[in-house]
Image 1 (cartoon, helix red, strand yellow):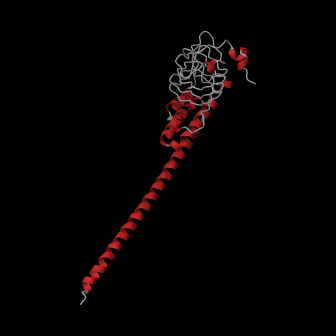
Image 2 (image 1 turned 90 degrees about the horizontal axis):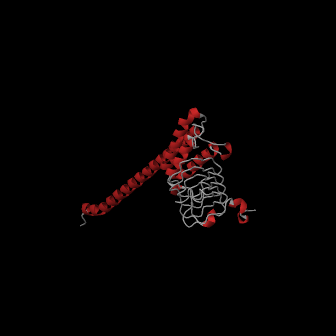
Image 3 (image 1 turned 90 degrees about the vertical axis):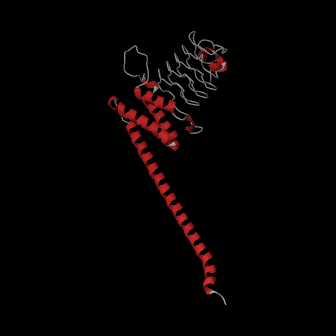
Length: 263
């Protein structure tokens, strides 16, 4: 005679185990889905906060006048913080900051210098220098690939650009006279017709383009990666200091040397 109770327990035990396992799996899937939804919502909220912070900083950066200097400085450092918080927004913020320099310190607009004595050494305005300082501190590995920093035809006379990475940057026609560029990286940078008179340039200049650059009074003795060919078509004088082993070009080479004339 079959023991019904014993038979039922033998059949029910696996069924109950399977139901329990299915319930546990369902709970796990539900929890996983809820975590994923919460994570997505948090990410959207964070992105919304970043967008709001960016929009506010850009609005403040656009305020003009000496009385708004503090507002602009706050915006510049807020954008620096955003670069650190959002790697995805880093390239856009760099472009906003460099555009600010091009607008507020154009080489054609005369000296964009801080107020002071008439004979004081020219230097950038406080907010422009703040942008240059932020650029020197940025994590340059987060720059957009194959996109260069554009500071072309800007007036950065007397700027402190110590340890600034400007590899492949566009510095065409930029006024860098008296600028401090030590420990910088300018490899591949376009410095065509740049004004480097009296500048300190102990920087990496490998493959930088210097055709027509004014190096009179500049100190390049500590520069690295420089070749005689790079400086062959530059303006130099007796006060120009070049790295050891570099052949000094003829005076006014861009004008006097026929091979330096480009059609």
